[in-house]
Length: 239
Ligand SMILES: C[S@@+](CC[C@H](N)C(=O)[O-])C[C@H]1O[C@@H](n2cnc3c(N)ncnc32)[C@H](O)[C@@H]1O
Image (cartoon, rainbow, N blue to C red; front, side, top):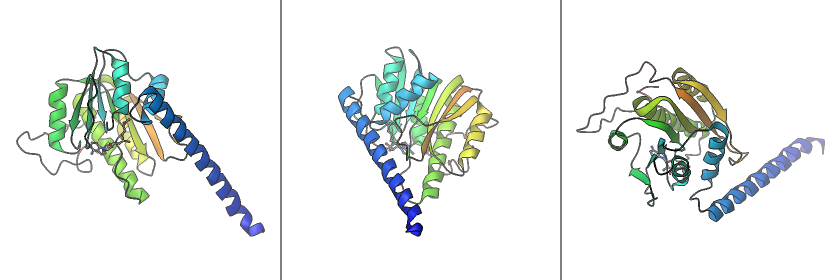
């Protein structure tokens, strides 16, 4: 009986955590349906924006990993008629009024070139809710998540205005500190945050970086407009 006590306690608390996570998931799912948001994830950005004041009327915003469009909807509401929102995703996104979408892989030069052309200058905010396909091996998923975050940083190095802001989703793990250090070289303030709308059991956190200082001692890789170069990779690039 004594021996079985600990596993029993931890399994009860696991069950409780899962129950809370499920209720929370269900709550935001219903709320998204009710308020016509395309994803529960919209509430994460709403909560982040309420707390950190990320977007304002007239801003230009790039939304990486935008499908199905929940964050782009929130961004468009924040920036209004005078602002600009450009979403990028591997997957097709149903049209959304006032938002432009690029279907492509941000790790691919061609997508980066399209994005730079569409933006045509500098932006105020870069958002990334990108997540890798879950392989099931946690350390691999974590490393891939960090790699995607570094592509978001690369986008900042190219097109984020001075004083601009970056929000990235990342799966926690041992590479997180290295990623935060990359951000600290480029931004005045870097905060790790978990919005209420994230499941309590989730390994994801959001990193809110504000006050962009400029690309840190890196010249972003020169893009070849004729042909995409396969060596463009977060590992061999600016990281
Ligand atoms: C959690 S979903 C984003 C949800 C979105 N923020 C919303 O509110 O609707 C993550 C997205 O990242 C995209 N993604 C993953 N890797 C990507 C890449 N290399 N380039 C572009 N998009 C990517 C996936 O296709 C997926 O749609």
